[in-house]
Image (cartoon, rainbow, N blue to C red; front, side, top):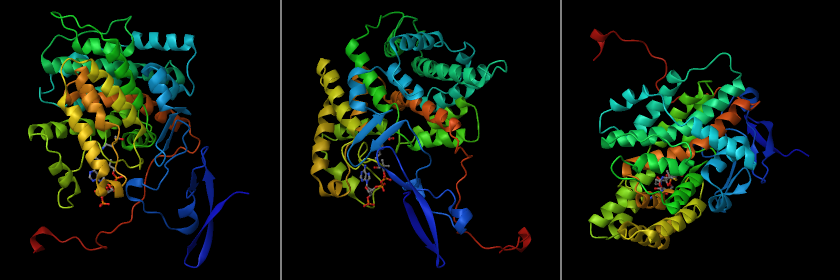
Length: 429
Ligand code: CMC
């Protein structure tokens, strides 16, 4: 028998259906609540609200579980590559050997960006943050690659998805080279996705870049761990903007803007800045812990805490391991890794963090890993954006195929002034 929840409004009882997800998660379906009772729900930050039914990513924040299309992220990080995981997220299943080859060839075929876009890149101020550049350039892609009426909707979506996955990576590398004032390096047809990106970033006409397979593996792991995380802030932004039926480039551009924030994707940059500050202050972590606990100080321990995970973020565990592997290869020791480990140890023993279930999240070790690969600090969030693209795309695709699809338009509880008359300016006190 269908389970229901009862709600009593003004003495009248209403029954609401309870729906169950494939892992037993339960939700009260309030989609007819206002129509039947005349009232709405209030849920700041949507902490108690499921905005959709989704078959893409499963997260259990209490147990620390993360699965893409049913497959544990630990297995994907160990055995898969980013391109294969992107295929899995977007298409629902792991590709066959032939499908994977075809997908990889398509990504390489679309890796160049329109030469005229170079003018755009060159006219951003040198100090512009790469996330601002990336979101603007992704939006500009629609102007350079307009919809072609002869194509079916499916063909249009497939080509847009391929372009995005391939060109965003190229655009990220171009913006870095232009920022440095260096020659732009083009993608190479036979190089796989991650190796191609590293080559575009670090090769130069005067010094060949030697692609290190361990760096390639670490980058694949980094991107796989970021590939999707169900209805997080940027994905919710992509779905919300997409619900107005804008083109996919515009929806992804909105996701990039949301990801830029320090409470979301910007945290990986903020973590390394914080670790750097601790290092500069002689390595004493205690004042930072004290500031994070101080109610009158807005400072937070960056890379700690998560809206969903109330235990160790499974991605952080894998990231920490990957970090050790890459750093172990380097001849130069990175003191920031020691500070990160020390800070983690200190925080996990501290009652403030214990009481609030605050554990390291994915961003805590990811910055140290990116630093080891040679990625500059202001590109960290861009790296997250490249990784999150398959998630944004698959969630957008799912939303447009959803029979429950609606324009996203939340309600509010108005708490402003009641009706009052307009007062001409000469009569205002
Ligand atoms: N340092 C110190 N205190 C914290 C922290 C932190 N990093 N995170 C949460 N708290 C405290 C917070 O002050 C509050 O305390 P109290 O109950 O006494 O008022 C309590 O823990 C609950 O915090 P909240 O802000 O209500 O929790 P939330 O679920 O809204 O916040 C969060 C989640 C990620 C925004 C927050 O933990 C935070 O700001 N962390 C630092 C930024 C960060 O690392 N962000 C990356 C998130 S993972 C990557 C991603 O998915 O984007």
